[in-house]
Length: 245
Ligand code: HEM
Image (cartoon, rainbow, N blue to C red):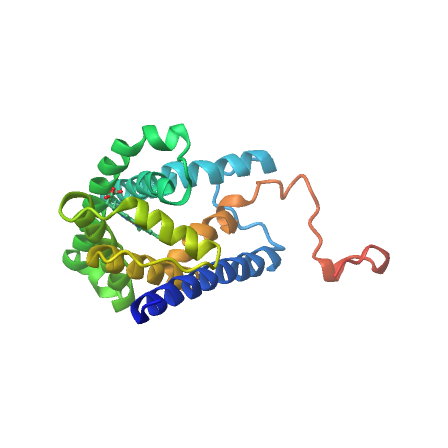
C-alpha cells in the first residue's frame, strides 16, 4: 500500500468514525435534554401527530424560511434539493449493482449538481453582499460554504473534464468498507474530492451543519399546542411514587 493510499484511507475512515460517533452523541444529547415547558411557535397543531407533520413540512419545504426570506428560501432549496439528488446519484459507487431507481435518476443527479452549485453561489453572495448578514458572519460560516463548493467543483471536474475509472473507485470504496485495502485510483480530482468529502463528514457533527439532525429536535416546531389539555409536571415535581429520573 502506498503512503498516499495509507494517509488518504486513514483520513477517510477516521472521518467516517468521527461522523457516526459525533452524530450519535449529539442526537443522544438532544434527545435526553429535558423540555418541560411548551415553547412552540403559535399557531401550532394540537396533537403529537400534527406536530410531526409540521416538522416534516419544515424539513421538506423550509416552510418558516419561506415566510421569512424568499431569496434565502430559493437558494437554500436549490442547494439542498441539488445535494439530495447528488447524494442519491452517488449510491451507485457504494451499491453493486445499483438499484433501478438509482440507475434511472443518474441524469437528475447531474442537474442536481448544477442546482447545488447555483444555491451555494447564492448563499456565498448573500454572506458577502448583504451588509447585515456580513456583519454577523464568521469565518466558519464562509468556510463550510466554500468546502461544499470545492466538493461540488471537484466532482463536476470528474464528471466533465477528467472522468475517473468508476470500477476502480467502487473497488477502492468496497475495500475501505471491508478493511481490505485496495489501490487508490490515481486521479488527482478524485483524491481531492474524497479528502474534501471526508473533511465534511468530520466537521459536520461539530459545526452549524448539524442542523441536519437538530431540526428534528427544534422545540418551537416539534411540540404540540396541548398546554391547556394536559397537565405537564416536571419530573422533579412529581409525587415520589410516580417519580421518574
Ligand atoms: C466518499 C464520498 C464520495 C465519493 C467516493 C465521491 C465520488 C465521486 C465521483 C467518482 C464522482 C464523479 C462522477 C462521474 O464521473 O460520474 C463524483 C461527482 C460529484 N460529487 Fe462526489 N463523492 C463523494 C462525496 C460527495 C459529497 C459528500 C458531495 C457533496 C457534498 C459530492 C458531490 C459531488 C458532485 C456535485 C459531483 C458532480 C456531479 C456528479 O457526477 O454526480 N460528492 N463524486
